[in-house]
Length: 271
Image (tube, rainbow, N blue to C red; front, side, top):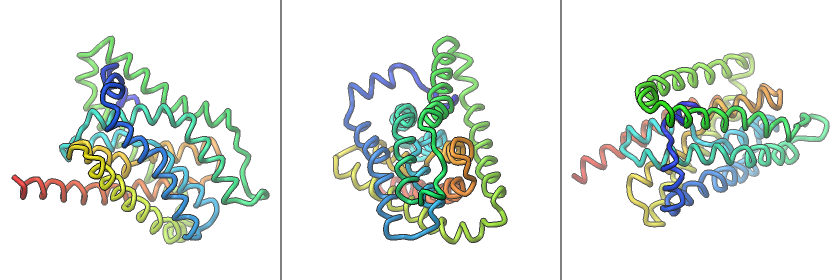
């Protein structure tokens, strides 16, 4: 999130106000459609309650630095991607605890449901999303030369740490991971593919440009798995709930790469 802040300026937020259509469509896809699609899938696709909550956690997380990187590589609207990541990360302080709290009540029995402190969850999400973004923006504002040089290094560091954390989460549940993967793997893959298709279709239906459609599609397909694991393992204290976030984060790289290859080939064919 600090690396996201390094890319942000106040102009990015002004753009949201001046050109709200692109942002609003992306925000609706990620804040409303993504958790809704996950909930519908879980309503007909029965898996272990704790895993179901884990699916809802990853579905309510914002995009991360990975979505910004893939949008750049796919020649999408990187500025829109970064703006969506930043603003939705700030909004996640409210939306994520709400979705997680409701999911625990809906999918888990009273006896097995963990105690969720809303205040602690809000504070935790605030500290891991809002604070690093703001610090990154301050660094970018006060030392733009350093921020520009360090931005690429920060992306690499954050991407490596992201992969390490995801692998660590999967290894941490290695005794049950095969059973968990059988349950959570298919539904997370379907959620990822369905949501990317819906985002792309909605962007096209609303008349957005191709770069904006790419940004919104990848923003809805590449979620912040690190945040999902943090919420599950640290704020809720349930390691089973972090597994869907880890599995989703591994699968999303494959679908994003396939999408990027298709977009590149289509661009070459059209030109």
